[in-house]
Image (cartoon, rainbow, N blue to C red):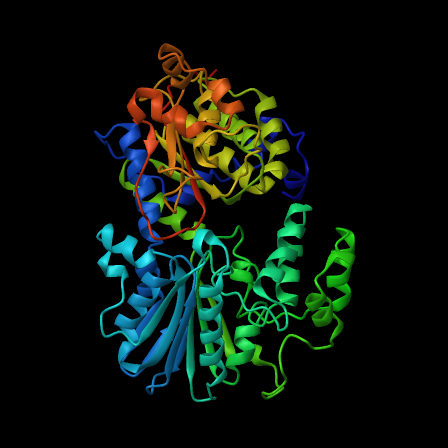
Length: 535
């Protein structure tokens, strides 16, 4: 098996022969497929809706907090409630998380402060999402800020109030911290005398110079009072419990909202090395140089010096994996054998579309698939963030689904691919991926006898558009050509939303509206039962 994972030159026959001693479908409880009258398009939308529903902010909180009289169980640990609960939060989905938390443990809540996006309360009201709003007599103060997803004075005011609340806690208190995507911009707390604009200037210069997310995070921590464990530090010696809705591949706790409850040291040598690497060391504002020159500059050492990390519980309660799991259950209800490829798909959409195209050709082959398909799939793995093991496991399920007559299959994946901008059109990575996969599927027939592909953002918004993504199949090219639409020109101009809006009256667009959550994207390849010729 080790050899299998390291080699990309194995023939398809050799790849699959390593599994055949124990067919994989026997391990996933094979049963007769369910007959469903829904179209492939409708079923794809149903499965996507199930994925989004699984990571709704109130749903994930309700499932993670178990109330037992005057105690609460979170992630297997029990905490006593004695009117000692305080709540803080920051992120795009935090308002709904806070509303549900208050419903469950509000009778022991002393006070709370949450930092949420500008205009979110009005938007939720307009969309009939009142269940995600706080009640009128709530003990939680809501501060809206970070307009256009950028830190601003309102977000900084919220961060200061959150820091003040945490700093007043004692060893008898319990601090519930709610975190979701967008939390970093909603919790700006630069170390004095650095101003918010100066900190933004440094991080923007770094991002523009090509710094990695890890390097940017290191600099943010070095210049912040609350990031990189700063919030947990200020709350010590109170017990801190963080409930996290992850929008980052792999769910790294130190990267989600820059890890305010994850203790991490900042080494001056590392910070200076990063700034020097991008030739910014001599361009720093005076205030930033002053802070970096001071030892232990992040926090005033006015609290117990013992390590606060033992008083912190970080629990990821919602993620792309959670969404894919629920999507798989719904797919099975609709007559598909679900198989999850990976929740960590990344890389350029062109490479990702080639991967899905090759997997579709492999799964839809009426005869033994050409060995070069498996080789190419395994070669693409590193480019798109998918492990060789996951690719081999997935191809094994697809192979047995063909040869053992399972029927239709639903291949699921998630992550956050990227798009190289070559034009000035209107679109997003999900819609562009759907376009490119549609071209890959061109020779594989039309639904219901051919495959269907869906790509959608769980936040309901793909780039600066009103759509979350799109649904496509092998008929995309001819359909567009018949309506006078040149797919290649739309791709060159990154104009995928305009393309799908004009194509057949926008019927292929995926537009669920405001979803109130974000765990990156969901990719779905629906493969019909394929009649095969076995020699």
